[in-house]
Length: 486
Ligand SMILES: *[C@@H]1O[C@H](CO)[C@@H](O)[C@H](O)[C@H]1NC(C)=O
Ligand SMILES: *[C@@H]1O[C@H](CO)[C@@H](O)[C@H](O)[C@H]1NC(C)=O
Ligand SMILES: *[C@@H]1O[C@H](CO)[C@@H](O)[C@H](O)[C@H]1NC(C)=O
Ligand SMILES: *[C@@H]1O[C@H](CO)[C@@H](O)[C@H](O)[C@H]1NC(C)=O
Ligand SMILES: *[C@@H]1O[C@H](CO)[C@@H](O)[C@H](O)[C@H]1NC(C)=O
Ligand SMILES: *[C@@H]1O[C@H](CO)[C@@H](O)[C@H](O)[C@H]1NC(C)=O
Ligand SMILES: *[C@@H]1O[C@H](CO)[C@@H](O)[C@H](O)[C@H]1NC(C)=O
Ligand SMILES: *[C@@H]1O[C@H](CO)[C@@H](O)[C@H](O)[C@H]1NC(C)=O
Ligand SMILES: *[C@@H]1O[C@H](CO)[C@@H](O)[C@H](O)[C@H]1NC(C)=O
Image 1 (cartoon, rainbow, N blue to C red):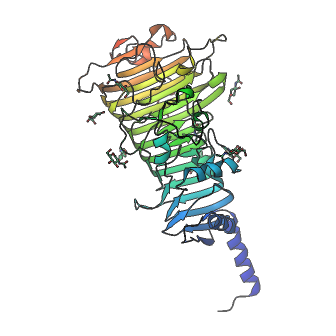
Image 2 (cartoon, rainbow, N blue to C red; image 1 turned 120 degrees about the horizontal axis):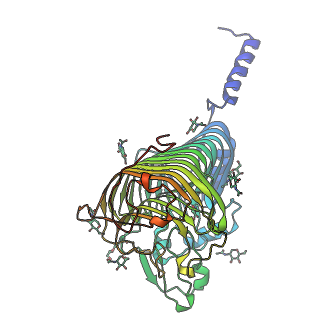
Image 3 (cartoon, helix red, strand yellow; image 1 turned 90 degrees about the horizontal axis):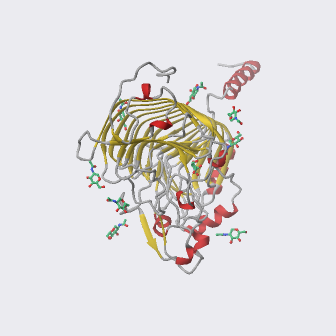
């Protein structure tokens, strides 16, 4: 058959129009692997440059040395198949040197090793547990409590994105940061539990080596407000710190769904932070000694922070300090609205449901004044269908200050619910179908809640008796507006 030139030209035009429309990847690049132990970062950059738009990029089923922090930007309609593994340097000094000089844009806290930016970007790992891994070799960092120049694994700042079947193994610090829009995460795996550590003992004592001054190795500031931090007494040369300090996900973007998470980590499993909107995180398991399914922290230093429309559904929290948590700083501003935690199973959890609008740095002295009497407002919060057991200890091994970072007045044992509200700034909260039991499977759990902090009429719809003492379910008198979206 012979086509006229015009027909062929027209056909090519149509094909390129389809490609431009961003649906059909037409080009394919395979990432070369040096097999001699050399850094593969240049090969990775080359593949992502050659196949920046309308492409498929394939990593072969081998180990790649991702030994330099890289930025993969300008991507448009790219599907990445990570059939192999991406391995960070095993040597801590190499990582620190690389982070010190990288031009990667810092994220909320740390600088990411991988910074990914573009539209319609999918990264698909492997169903095989040995592949599709990001190996961080974090154990050695946790062992000596090294928190200087620690990278976060990756920032996925895309519009239209998919992360599927990926595994984060012993990351140095935090995992994925998702500030983008229209993103799905499926079947995500995190192993960030220190070898041989327990919930009670995630803390090491160590003697800093002579290579560096402790003040350099261990910043005495909080790396993440949701965890422990280092006591600021470096002169004692005996510093206790946290072995792992890891967040599965930081969500600050819009329209993000995490469906399928299996992780063992300290710190939060999911942390929804300022700017987040329309977030669903469902079907997950959070083990080791996590700090829960969290919103916040919000409103630090009076910041005007906002979070809207969040649903956590169908999670098992095993050994966690918190099941569901909201945390905003004393004197905060802004608001969090329309947040729900549903179908949550607790195993050995310190506090099932926790809200504080009065957080402060416990290791920096007493709660600061709040002269403007401001607070990050919360509204339309629902906790529904919680079942399971509390643990035997109200905290885990991450306390290094007195009082502990997670202490609130009256906390002396595991509690089913703690509401530490700022008066009059929490509206339309309700708990229903709550069956949280003691470690011995008894119903007599206790709550902390100050009735004077409740807004007028709030007790009528709260679903439990706001008082320090036993958990007592109360009828919910009328339906609240806005219930049951999502
Ligand atoms: C980081 O860079 C600064 C400034 O160039 C340098 O003084 C410091 O030694 C570097 N630190 C590491 C760990 O490379
Ligand atoms: C994400 O990308 C947008 C531009 O598309 C930029 O404004 C924003 O600062 C980036 N966020 C992060 C955390 O890198
Ligand atoms: C995630 O958010 C928490 C709370 O705001 C912050 O402390 C942490 O540094 C963030 N992590 C990343 C990787 O952005
Ligand atoms: C939300 O993101 C998904 C992709 O995860 C997309 O299919 C959907 O259209 C987005 N919704 C809106 C309202 O943009
Ligand atoms: C765990 O601890 C045991 C006993 O102290 C030790 O022999 C083993 O090497 C440790 N395992 C790891 C992976 O650190
Ligand atoms: C609770 O755990 C902490 C940290 O491991 C520990 O110091 C404390 O002794 C424990 N308390 C009880 C009552 O077991
Ligand atoms: C709940 O999540 C688990 C994974 O943690 C999944 O196996 C199960 O099918 C989910 N249940 C429902 C009803 O979706
Ligand atoms: C706080 O931020 C929200 C959303 O960004 C904005 O609508 C509001 O006006 C801000 N409030 C103040 C007091 O700045
Ligand atoms: C709860 O944790 C303790 C140790 O922290 C452990 O001995 C016990 O088996 C755990 N219980 C369940 C139900 O997992």
